[in-house]
Image 1: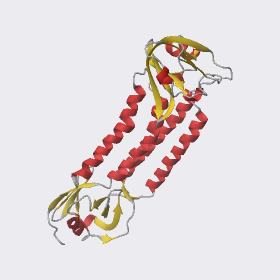
Image 2 (image 1 turned 135 degrees about the vertical axis):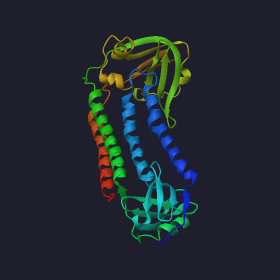
Image 3 (image 1 turned 180 degrees about the horizontal axis):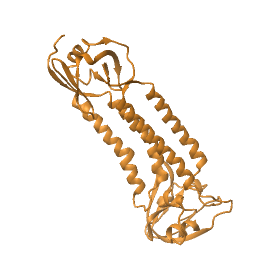
Image 4 (image 1 turned 180 degrees about the vertical axis):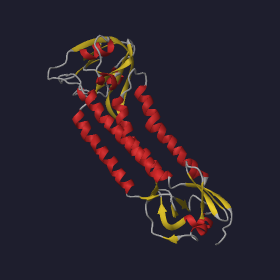
Length: 342
């Protein structure tokens, strides 16, 4: 048996800590920041925003294990075996006899091209990349001297497979919760136009709601109700709202027309809230007429009905597509060869 030279090989710091930085950024952008937005100054979290957002971004978290299980952060070779540590996992020792095969193939990312060596063990596997290790040539010489060259194949250990299955199952449950939310938040309504109510108060703030530069509406805050946003939506009017923000005088009275049900449920609290009233844009109150002195007068030309809050049929169809994607990922993982410790 050939005795190998002892040595410690570590992945370049940029590749190791860069991945953890990516996890932190994804956590901030997909969990922390959306949660803060959904609960900002609201007595009830805005689940109509939070649940769909999390259901979609959860697929990013399923991708991370596929990447992390291919990152070997340290290898220590000894005379009779080696220590191997994957990112986020403890180091494990293996004798060289545990190497059953290896495969080297060219690979690339958006930034660079590199060689990738996959080493298959009894019950485990690991990957070494030429761009991640300065001493890749030395490591390649060590691990290709044991075992046999084999074709590349997708493999996974039992813990890795179970983790991915757990993430897929959790995502599927969250998607099902979205579908259930659609039925729970749906308010049954009839074809009778809603009763409207005029409200006059001083303007505290006015700002535009734009998405990619396109104006969706103007949000008005009133001094008597600072916790609510009175939303003049573009879809309710047949005229341009572009000059509206400039026309509104801050600190001056404005008269807005809203649904009487919004006033009773949210502002005066003389009527109980439904599930949809609580968890679907609780702070937002739609405005159907806005008038300020002689400066402007906006009137919605369409009849106003009570809000349905959610359309469960459309929601079920859309989120069923995500459930299908979860099933596809589950099948993809099942097609990996499972490496079991003998």
